[in-house]
Image (cartoon, rainbow, N blue to C red; front, side, top):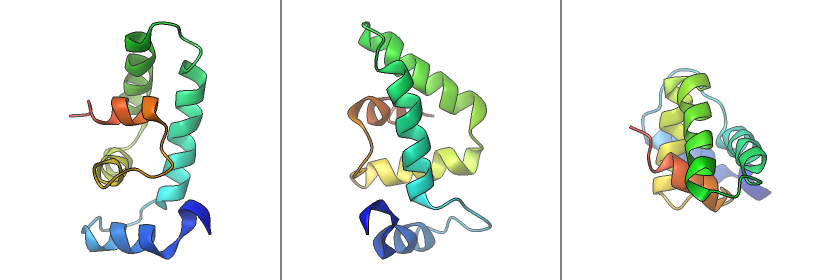
Length: 90
């Protein structure tokens, strides 16, 4: 079932992320798409900064919170570049 499994939904529900939320598999795909765009940047710091900047500016705080919690729990399926950026979210 990939990233769209029961575990991810339970993870989000058990962490009190109430209200409407986007399933984590959608957030993973979007985050990895952003990461793929910046992956071609030869300077790793600029690439991480680009991902971080995009997510900080354009993602709803609930989305940022969900992906951050998911990454803190291991972040299966999230690219290393994206994980590095997510770990810098405040």
